[in-house]
Length: 187
Image 1 (cartoon, helix red, strand yellow):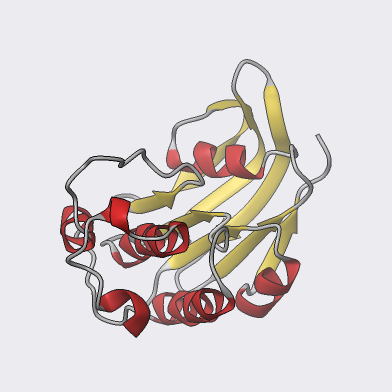
Image 2 (image 1 turned 135 degrees about the vertical axis):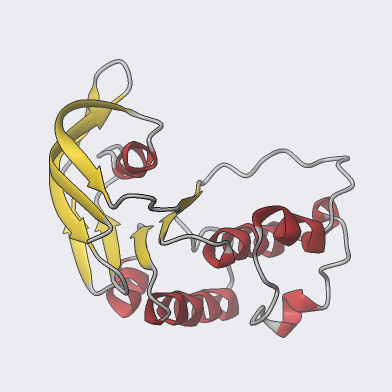
């Protein structure tokens, strides 16, 4: 077991999600689904340690390394950072990147399209060293080819022993890649 949540209620000034309970083990992909405002992103934040826990608990394996991809990409306008440098900063490998992005790694991030930047940020998180990978709405801004490649990359990462949690409004994507789904209710 990498992560266990028991009756977790989390939020900021007040509770936003919960109670939620789940287990995540090595090689598993857990989907988290539900309507806007039900606390899916807040749950990821609680797992990563950046959100207040009101009740319940989260237990993590000792020395568990967690990588988190959020919906908010950093503002990179005018920052001379290339895709290759982003991957180096996270310790991620470029091996396996789709050809439509692998050939653009030496370009500045602010010169890439929104979908290309999104995929590169996803890749940096997905391929960084870590045991558990948390992805918040990873299919945002991706075209169908990017979604297909991402689905395969998630399966490959899980097969290598990582535990993954995927928050998504894309029910078809969740059904295609996740071993099981935790549905959160309305806020």
